[in-house]
Image 1 (cartoon, one colour):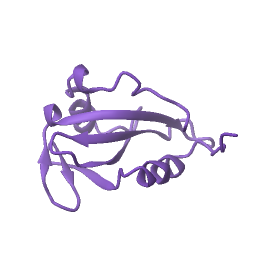
Image 2 (image 1 turned 135 degrees about the vertical axis):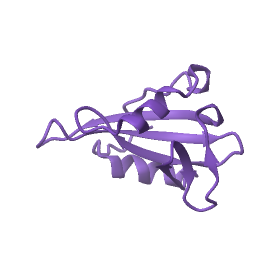
Image 3 (image 1 turned 180 degrees about the vertical axis):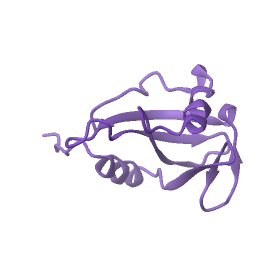
Image 4 (image 1 turned 90 degrees about the vertical axis):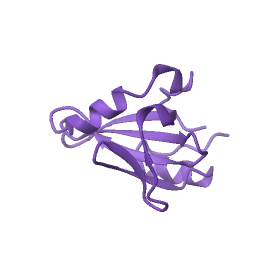
Length: 113
């Protein structure tokens, strides 16, 4: 039987960490930075394995997207961004610039397996 987890960002982050996606990526100066190695990545160097959208239960304006990422040099981790009215436009544009070919065919998933 499949273990049911609540649909919160932290549940997905923990699940992906168990699967080896342990890097915490940060957005700075129009690049995605590996918080451990400090390597900087451009959109064409990033591959989206999955992404999950969330809407706050108590505040519908509290919206976010969790991206599950692999880089061209095989670093694996996650990055959480806000979207909607409170989104960082530079960060949103950065993710829009990731080539469509760099998205997994199953990237838009909503359930943990």
